[in-house]
Image 1 (cartoon, rainbow, N blue to C red):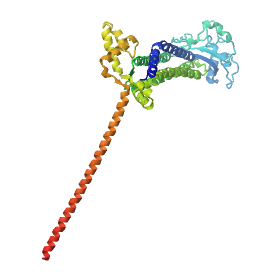
Image 2 (cartoon, helix red, strand yellow):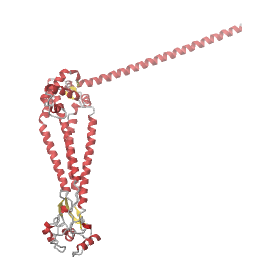
Image 3 (tube, one colour):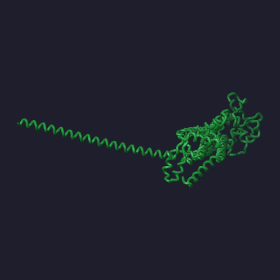
Image 4 (cartoon, one colour):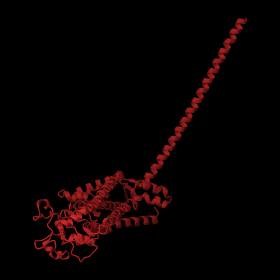
Length: 450
């Protein structure tokens, strides 16, 4: 190798090793920040799911008239085609949910949050048994004729929104738990890929190229399918949570009648929050895949490496690879296994286990990793082969195959020649037989004439 090429090659090695040693803090810092953003966005999603903005009421029906008659309160004339939020609130809501609506009237937009509790609704002991699932909206000192706007002042005696909602929060807990599991799996995968890249860098400092396992594509495919299924379940439960909470809130009743509130649609905001987390998912996943399987793929993938040597005709590319040798991942594990058993006490099996798990843990530092590989190489040099030999062997095999094909063709030609000779001999024999027959006939004719 030329001196200039050797210097450039050594500089590349130094760069890779330097990256593997100093980028660990950056890697984990980025991971922590991205995961914190995802968790914060997820919390915001559930906060948005539990926040409801009242934007109107459904059109009045015969049930609503029954509701008004049951309340026995003088309401103003209601236009069924223009049943506004103010009309809904003024005519019905404050008498059932006095704590909820405490703003100045008339407002065409009111908001409230669903409480994170699972307390059962309060029983109504003042009504008959048929109505015991509904709370008495009036305190003992109030009556239906009380001022609707002043009813909020006596809200301490009245029921609050918590007393009416029957929300099943198990979907929220399950969905958020599924989200946390996805984060853990994603972090483990990202952490594992990063460690493998670091080990490959460290081996490259000794001019060893780490071979990828043959089942890497299969394992990656299984991971992608599993991750897709987990993410699909996670997304499904997020949308299901929204619809379930909205449905439960819409079941608020008072005197056996639906309050009939209309809520602002949260679907658009929720979709934006989901897309934000999806984009972060892909950013994290793309970073791990791109940096390992593409940026350094030409050095670690045997097929890409052969193509690399064939497509680059420059002597520098060939000479650069002549000093590189392949090392299988199983050989790395064998080297570390023997080194750890010899150097460290067997009384610490847990620590030794993580020291041996060099592709999953940083317990084995560079001070142990490189000497272990060096010792293994000195004792088992025959287990390592030069990278450039793979390409040469392939060429030799191709040449041998071509020679074999040529020999086969020559043999076929010889066989054809032999067949032709045999045919000629057969023809000559036939001619000779015909001659003998003709001679015999001539002799017989001559005898008869005589």
